[in-house]
Length: 185
Image 1 (cartoon, rainbow, N blue to C red):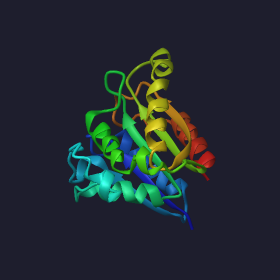
Image 2 (image 1 turned 120 degrees about the vertical axis):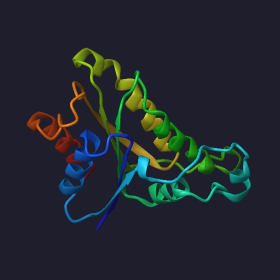
Image 3 (image 1 turned 30 degrees about the horizontal axis):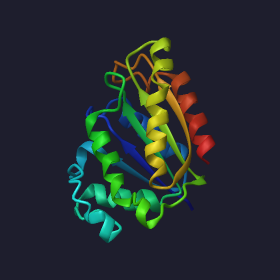
């Protein structure tokens, strides 16, 4: 049985990101799946104290430290997040900044594994043209997650998602996310 982590980065409880997370969890079947909602966790920003360079892990003891360790051990992961103003929300970047605790060129870097996959499901209110312009957001996130071992990434960007029930009511969007889950498996 494989272990998967689904990180949700939306502040809207019960809206698209939560529906997508539950859809992915169900689609992963009997695998071990944890949904990690960023807005329900206790974490802080990177302190840039470089203690992690001596310790080999972040010196802050909070939920983000646990998430980074869990991501390193997971077989695969998903990040589900809205795109605000052409970028991920600030709290998602706060979590990504905490990857710094395992990034240490002086002691050598872990080479990301192509067998370890991360899938991104990004939602936004824009049309198809805006969706195309949002592709660099997923690429940048893929690079960031390579620090914690993910060597393969793929993404689905869903536009027109201002309505908090858009995903739950769209067979087309569910089919796109199901294709991403199948790629993961």
